[in-house]
Length: 437
Image 1: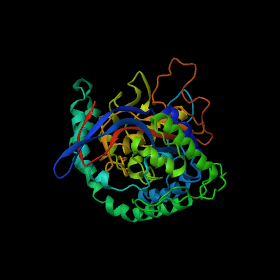
Image 2: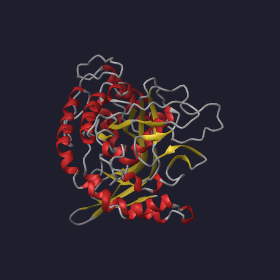
Image 3: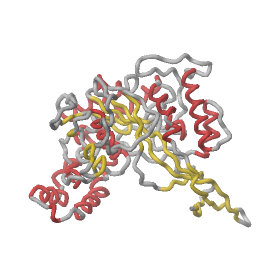
Image 4: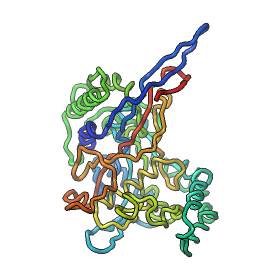
């Protein structure tokens, strides 16, 4: 319940709901056509819960993600041919400390309820198979923009590798065979959702949600109501719908699923399904741990100041690239934040050199979406929950303390909510004309 509670409590700060315009559609009959309209809105959605941790036994989302992580750890060990180890403690000292952590991204149940997304999905090799054709040309274009006066032997070698990566790409051909049996096991994890509230069982399909008692990460649970939902969970839904109703101006507050029906016309469905596994670093061990170093093709892995989580070299929490589990950052909270940002960078884009399931808007049949490239917002959930959303990388160099002070975890397990911004309007007819503004 802790994840759902923290998410609902952050709605008033993180949702940022705005009406931005009107969409126009054309509906035609036998002898005439008419115009229909719907409002255009934008807001943030809590798409996924991103966790960073040392080992599956210390996963901070104990009731749900810990069993999944344990299963993924076995898959990763099989891929790597050795036992996975992430026990690189992040120490706060006046010297460089290389930390290594595992990470995962799982669909936020509140975000799924907001958009009515009942699908359950898991990673596959589709995106990485598209890497040579879709992402590699972009990487080569990035290298062409690196100033020539920065060139040295190392950079020139990296640039040459990006334009002739055949040796690395040859390793991608065997991936479908390596992962086929593992994906069969991962798909079976969908049945685990039957023991958790409002989850769909197995496969990337839409099903009727199952409602049972949910336990918190500390092992407590709510009492059941006659509908099968825990009373505390029903109260959370009520609070969520009331908050959404206030911000969206909807007259429907309701409770349970009936309230959602009144609100969905004014909400853009997000990108993740109910407790979907969008990313797991152990399943992605070949790339997260650098055994297949495709991340080194990116200029950001070599050029300081490119893709920093922060403001260039003046103030940075760490580099987005290379998007592996290793990082030089002495503050454990900032270290977790940078690793979470790396996971977000992977799952928010197509054709990345990783094993994952891309976040994509689930309501495209019923809604018209407008692309927005804004950075996501982050909400701290564990060990100290926050009701506010922030952007990682804020400059705290002149502050008395550093971001995350007094919010550290004893076992270095951290949980963040990733809020993404969506802008859409409800599709009134198949023929979309235009939108204003």
